[in-house]
Image (cartoon, rainbow over the protein chains, first blue to last red):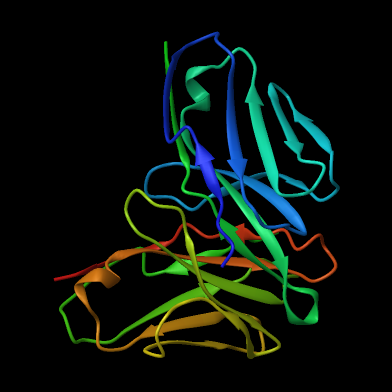
Length: 114
Length: 113
């Protein structure tokens, strides 16, 4: 069974500070996706990384996939109240016909205090 | 481009009843995956449908079943509901050959009393 552990589980910081969320596993994944979820809504895809060592930037968010494709990190620079939400990482495993099933982490609930 | 839609948005059932949840996939997508998200947890994979066949299943009992239709929409059926089935049920659509990125619907909140 593939497991993904996220840390920290909860994070509350002041507006303008930087933060990093970690996603770790002992399993190798074909891809790693990061989502943000608001209460009562479905997760919204932020980014997909597929190559070991890959780094992607989305405005103030920087995502990195570990060299061995077992772990990932999300770094937010100068956090803003709009960044508040539940951040989920999800590892992809190729199933039949080239589709993927996702294994989700436990999530990091981020609160940015104005 | 139409996103993933799910119905109903909320549902209340009693223990032992049966429920059907529906999902319309995003335009151009041929694969639908279903997830269960309990309060305070990450989504758990239930199963995936591709070409109207089940294509992978998570650790869920047989009373969780599904269908995919020729237009790629899908249903999730749960029989003999239990209290622990109370959760947000999420549908995600994707397409082979498009990095397998999955796009989620808003979910159906199921409460079992």
